[in-house]
Image (spheres, rainbow, N blue to C red):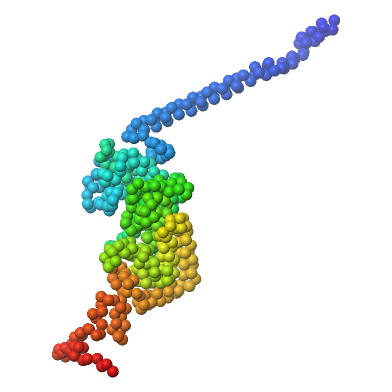
Amino acid sequence: MARKYYVEAASSPGMLPSPPHGPAHAHHSNRPIWGGLAVGILIVLFAALLYYLLRRKLLTALRKKSPWKVKGSLKDEKLIMLRRFQLEELVKATNSFSQECLLGSGGFGNVYKGTFDVEGILAIKRAHNDSYQSLEEFRNEVKLLSKVKHRNLVGLVGFCEEPGAKGSKMLVYEYVANGSLLEYITGRRGRNINWRQRVIIAIGAAKGIAHLHDGITPSIIHRDIKPSNILVGDGFKAKVSDFGLVKSGPTGDQSHVSSQIKGTPGYLDPAYCSSFHLTTFSDVYSFGVILLQLVTARPAIEKNRIHSNYHVIEWARPSLERGRVEEILDANLLSEPCNMEMMLKMGQLGLKCVVKIPKQRPTMTQVWQELEAALYSAENFINKYPSWDSRTSNAATRRASVDCDCSQSFVSINGIGFQRFHVDMDSMSFQSTSLRCLENNSISIEIDKNNLRGICEEKSIEEEPLSTS
């Protein structure tokens, strides 16, 4: 009876049926949502797979287009950023490598100025046939140089490799228009730089070399640091160039054993030459020689003196150790106010860089930090006492003209060496041995008393013997 009543109540037309409940119905209602989500995921996966396949196919095509496979630790993308130049492009840009486009030459090869329609002016280094022992050596160098990116380093733009063992191998760099530091030190083409500009160039070059040593892993040893390989950009910003002898350096405290000594005489580290162990301190030695040249404007090795192969280190050391930088200072620096204290610090830092034991030398990072700190102190002092700079320069100039040792009194003006000498007008005494013939005990002076009257009389001092009393 109760059962019948329940059925009738449920089927009464005035009553609405309650909605169904339960897990089976909930699963049935969510099925379209899950289906759409699964389709979306499949579409994303398919698109990702398609992108991967297309990208892989593109990279494969690029590798096939390149004449050599990339090996080593560098990623492929590094080399894709470099442009591969055709030989015909470089021949056209340099007018068939004419002498008019020749910028310089060295043991590694010749450097030419090339003009391109799109890239503008670039520097092209054409290697000698024997510069690379193998094709793989050239390829490794391109991979190594592709890592070098710094504002004080000349950047590699591209390369050119012709097939065959004797095919042309060239590196294409950015072009720096203002010449090399060598031109400024020697005064070629009337180029001279004051004391502040010399320090700025030294700081920039030191930062570039420090990046090779500390900013790249493994480090890079330049092996040919010299003034002609330091280019001067706008605002006297230095750019280290000519990585023709770069070497991937050792890791940690180790040294690299080189089977062949490479570099430029006068700038080669004696420790490296004697032991064949190459470290970053070999570059520090070379830079120390440059610091001394920035102060003195002398060649690294003087071959025209009585003492053959007289090195600038030995020539400058006595004066710098006594604190008398004015005795060895480049005469071009005396044409305007010069901060002698800054020049002395730079010269003494150069001596620290060339000590015999490599590990006792400062690192290149320490070199630029010390130079930068000294320049900051000097400029702050000059700003506080503006007249001190000129007083210091003038006083040093007077001392240099009065008591210079004749064995250390050679200066350079416009690239020409001159010997300083002291003249005592009272006794006509010359400290220069080459001018002793002009002293008063041997000099013969012609006296023209009749420039005004037109009457000529000559009288020799030899006719009037000096009194011995």
